[in-house]
Image (cartoon, rainbow, N blue to C red; front, side, top):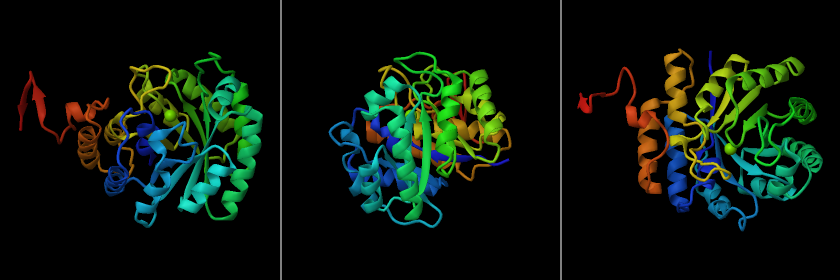
Length: 307
Ligand code: MG
């Protein structure tokens, strides 16, 4: 089996970090991720820079990135203006988010969920017509900080309507990190029943330490692409002390030991997570860079590192 990892550290990750990295450092990070073997990377956000100052240099990041055969640079957009910016900047793909929670969608994007679905249709059609791959993510699919539980039927209804515009795949996101594996398997399972030919992607945050379990459940339900962030950076805007996206290296460790291929180097990802710690000036939440790989890495026994 093969799982495609979509690296979201440079966008979903860095967006939630208080430190704003220089453009050159962001570009160096993305180049390291490519060297490690990642092929789909969310590199920037084309939203209002006043609302997300960490992403204000989106155009400059894209301008500084070399073209690599087979690498897809994804830019987050929430409306047509965002798509125009992403297109002008040279993105290979766009990612749009539609929030299943009406309250959250209005707070995050300033319009109703219904209006976002209409915008998605226009965005996906125009993107396809100019050779940009349209990615769609349904946010708060497993729970919302304002509305609490989200009805699965509402998520499925939004997903089915988004599917009409020929997305790369349909992603369900646990935006605030409240999902548990049974819920993940159930919702993706229902989606797969309704859309048997549609590829599926999962996006999990480790806010409550369930992200890796949710990745496993998603794969069991037929998901074949997983969003993850180097070092697990990202945080959660509704839980200020919380950890971030599921860490790429931790996902890699689990998949490698399960015999699932990704094409991504675990050693290079560990190096990159350590490098990133120096750039952001703090430790990252990922566990693998603390424990080391197994069976290749040095083993720490009773506090003594043995070569
Ligand atoms: Mg996220």
